[in-house]
Image (cartoon, rainbow, N blue to C red; front, side, top):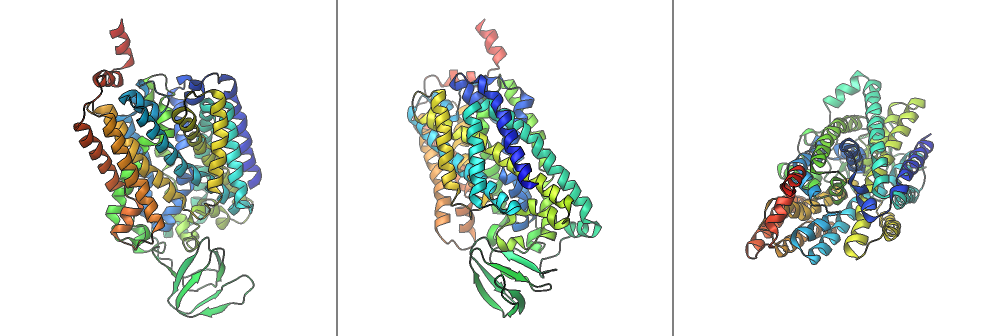
Length: 562
């Protein structure tokens, strides 16, 4: 049933995407669908590509792992569109650009800035796209037992073929359809779970108690190397087929792939840096990843990254170029806020129930799977299988919809911005080639955290394209040199710092926050750098005319021309 549901989603994706084939005659058709997408259809498509693996699976998984504070991610993701509506949507459409690098060169007249912007698109899109393919492989493994690589290859093939055939128009039709599908397949199982679990479980989810003992015999398959601390004699089997033994207190290093089976009533081991679900730290409405000890600072940094990063995501920005005019772009953003607000009411349902019914996932590192694992825990019969299939299909739709937009941005950056003379044929070939490269990166990324990678993409976008767009649209004194230096500083202060944090074993504390989520520092630093460097130079001669073009309504411009 699960395999059939996922195959159906893939087949429908290809069939709907085929509608865009006949309309592809130019690069404008391929990249921005000839700028003829209506606000309602565009908003549904934007919502479809924005609700990625991080939204469909990641927010609920982070809630089980890190606590109630993970719901701030949903707030930041939605609030980002309010900032975009106010600052970016309509002016960006009025530029007539096809991509963010197009805007950069048109606004500041610098081919070098265009190349740099194209390189930043590659960084952001890769950070965001790899976890989509990774999550596709992971979900198929969990729900159907297929090897991890199968889901990665299937997702990569479906997305690349759809885009190569129909470009942005195909992506729009598919993403709008998949948004409605995801909304249905996310909300209906959530309501069923709430009704099915019973009053006691609902009360426990609203008033969580710390997870201290296993209520039943519980096998735990670890997805990466961990160090457990056992505080009292604990009955468990440390390998399949091995007899149950009483483990004495102490520290135990557990290798990736190990399966421990804890007996009913056994004490839950402690996991360094992870608060047990239901505890005081878990129930606090602030983020404190890995027990860093600065929850307010960590929460503010995530909000800066998600709210401002939304404005800089290249696959979201390009969506506003598909609108007929600036007014339609603004309406698209407003409708998108409403659609996302409906969706983000429900990840908390899965996270709260998962903390009660599947708290052992926090030991395994598999909290990303809590959404698809809940139905079978609640009901082992046909109903559980049905809703598992629905959620698996919805999750796969989330991977495909987001991957379509990201792969389009990635191939557009390579073929249109970094290489001269883009043609439809080159765009199609580049789409297939970049998909192959991303699949190759996703295959060894099975142990990387989806939420961490996606948040890193938001951080880089907030530290590079957000300052470029906001200052480029609202400040006439911005210079090409200021934009280049500011973007380089923002890129190093975000991607460079995050990469350093991955490479180093940083102890919990302030350093862990600054290295793991540096947006609170990198974004102001990028803005300040752009301003200070620009003040020492001279803006382009056409800066004032460019500002008028960005802010004067199309109807007013037409009247002035007459």
